[in-house]
Length: 435
Image: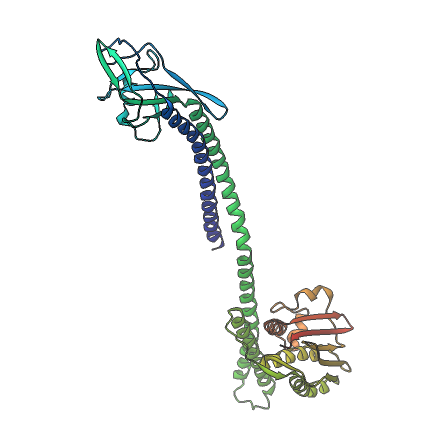
């Protein structure tokens, strides 16, 4: 799936970059072409408006294609260059009566140059191996008139045509086109490479998410399989002795109940995290008394702490009001206190403090327990992560408590931080916005 997605993203990115590159190259080419030809066209139209010709005598060598030995050429300036422009005059029935030079254009060229083949704007035509810019000149009412005798008959040229050689410009445009094509091909390769790079960058979060999801499913399967295996084993032992009393098999029954409770707790945690990942869990925010939640939690954990001969101290200010989900904050407090009781040895001390400073509520749970090794601290909020797996399972942990605690804190817009030293203890500090 990742490979197919990467290929699709690479193709899409390459296509987009290629379209941009092709558009840019086309823009450069047509702008350059327009700049070159617009200057020539402007000069041609200017020359056409200024030229006047009259009373030119001539002779012809061919009745069908009359021509003049005399040349009529005008020099005009384009930018910093002087450029010759040639005049042609045509009769009303499209016969040339003056040519720029003897033999310059053949019969085929003259047929292509007939004024009816061109519109009112200058156009480019190829004659032989040369390129010309052709302009039909002014309209007949205002065009210069050429009088010429051909075979003793007076010919009147009423259609003026101007030509100038643009082979150098066409050659330059072709070189530019080749450069742009070569650059476009190299750019296409770069676009494919860039598309592949961008696709890989875009897939990093997706790949990480899928890896986490696969790891989550794998860990969840393992965690669910363990209590189910224990329940199945003790249930089979019970079936082997159907004549035993409950008192005789109380050990097996107690283990089944213990694993059932653990399984229910695990499923509940998994459901909470699954809903949080899909944003299906909404907080029921309302104005609550944080001190009441902390005092209630301390009351519930006092008996459990006394069983282990642990001193549980509470330092709670009153009142502490904030907008929050009461049930979720109670769950957060129980997770933190439960961990503290589990990992604090007999005779230890647990301190639970809560106070408000300005617009921030501080919740602190500190113990004198076994502590957490430094190498485990970066991973303690990962799902199913347990530093001492054997001890955690013995204590009934699921590896989801701190992950859920972090989600609760972050959904309330707060932060959670853990400081710990092995054989010294652990301190958990939670900050929540009061607003």
